Length: 172
Image (tube, rainbow, N blue to C red; front, side, top):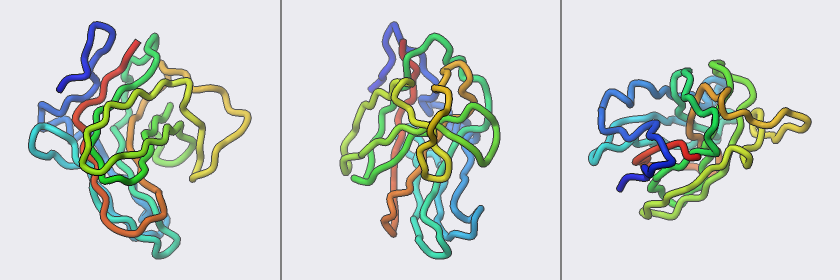
């Protein structure tokens, strides 16, 4: 099912298997943790963000994000995603630079096990965050400055996770 309307533009629909190559993993092993997470192509032309969360060695997060580029989001109000999850809590995150570490803007999302959800993420509702803490006195997110999109899981629950992403679109 397509989320596309006359006021939206597709960013990712994963009909081309090569779109997965634009996504990289950044997990807690960058800080000594043992969580695993990756993006892969799944049947029905979707991105599968899956892995396992471990709290060992002060770990507890896994993430995937796009390689930096201009998504041409200026003039748009937000991003709409179609996802099917496992009942766990995730974050959709955007960054205004190409850095591996640093501030991101997040929007929390709660999945319902084995249920497709269409979720609107208005840019005005994204919160600035750094290593799990909400930042104060930060300028609001400017849509045209966004250079990376991604998903993160850091719900402090040990074990496997799975988030299927069908489509990502920008809306006016």
